[in-house]
Image (cartoon, rainbow, N blue to C red):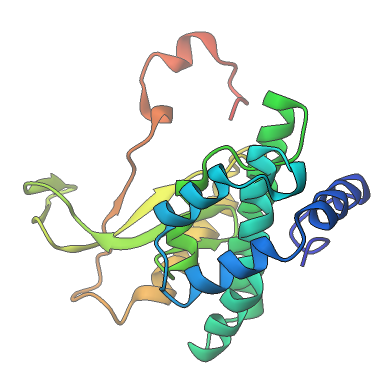
Length: 212
C-alpha cells in the first residue's frame, strides 16, 4: 500500500528501519484496536509508555496506523467499498507524514486522534476532499434556505494538504461523496459542513491567491 498512497523510496526505507526496531508490537496493538478491544486513547497511552525499540513517538503512531491498514482493507471488502475509495482515504497518511517531515524532519504522525474515524469507517477520502459521515451537532442553522436541525444527516468536509484546490477536482469529490451516501438521507439536498481554520476571512489579506 505504501507506494499506492504516495510513499517515496526514501520514506519506505525509513519506515522499514523503524518497523524492524519496533517488532510486532504495532501489529498487536492494531489487532486489538481494529477488533474494538481497545480505544484509540488506550492504544496511544500504551504507545507513549512503550520503548518500542527506541522508535520516536510520532513514528510509533505511524507504524500503528499502517498496521491497521490491512484489517481496514478487509472491512472495506466486507462492506463492498472499492479499492479506489480505500486508496484515496489512506493517502491522508502520506499527507500527515509529509507534514511531520516539514515540522520535525522525520517520518511520523503528530495527530494520532485524527485518524481514528478512518478506521471506524466514519471518514473517507473522495479524490481531493475528505468527508466525515456524521450528523449536525448543534442547534438548527439555515443553509441556502434549507434548515439543518440538530441530529440531521450531514457530511463534514476536510481539506488534506495534498496540493492546490482545483475547482473541478473539488466538484468531483462532492459528487463522489453524494453518490456514496445518497441512500442515507431523505430528499436530494446533502448539507456539507466545514469547521476549518481556512475559513478565517482575513487569510486572503496575507496569503497569495494560489495558497492552500
